[in-house]
Amino acid sequence: AQKITQTQPGMFVQEKEAVTLDCTYDTSDQSYGLFWYKQPSSGEMIFLIYQGSYDEQNATEGRYSLNFQKARKSANLVISASQLGDSAMYFCAMRPSGNTPLVFGKGTRLSVIA
Amino acid sequence: ETGVTQTPRHLVMGMTNKKSLKCEQHLGHNAMYWYKQSAKKPLELMFVYNFKEQTENNSVPSRFSPECPNSSHLFLHLHTLQPEDSALYLCASSQDPGREREKLFFGSGTQLSVL
Image (cartoon, rainbow over the protein chains, first blue to last red):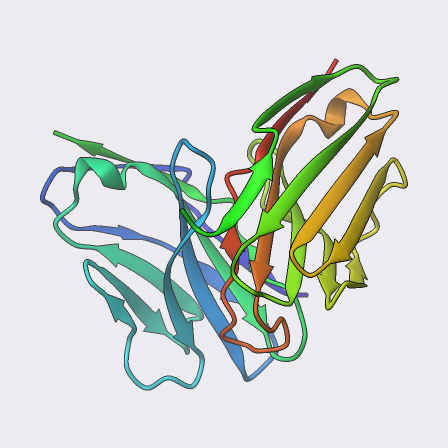
């Protein structure tokens, strides 16, 4: 069965500092995609970054980067230079190969402190 | 603004009521989804429609009835709900659900409270 584990229910970070949000996954598929979404208090889930299992480089999108360690089955999100607007829930998700839906983790609540 | 609009934003209903949630996407996508988000639980996929055809029903109770009249609109009809059905219901869309790197675009959700 496919499973996403986010072990940090809540995290605090000082403004302008970097923070790492953990994500581990379990799949027997060789080909899969990994996603991170942000959910502010407004409720909308916002796509942040994508990593393919065969991508050789770690994905980066602006202040977001994904620390992908395939052998350890981890896909941690790194947010650099945190801003107050980064305070939100963050969800890691995985899509195994084929026509299968996204599987989400329980999320991590990030609070950025001024 | 992601291009996916959900109404209403908030809904309070009694267990004997019938109500409907509406979702509309303006992105030209072919697939639409309903997810349920309960406190301290992962998002649960409920239904998937691809080109108006239901392709996934994740063992959802029959008191939830989806309807997809076209690729841009998705409804969730609710009747005789239970208090444990209180949750945030999120609608999403995507271009091609078969692609591994396909990302979903979500609406802001309907916060449902069942009394």
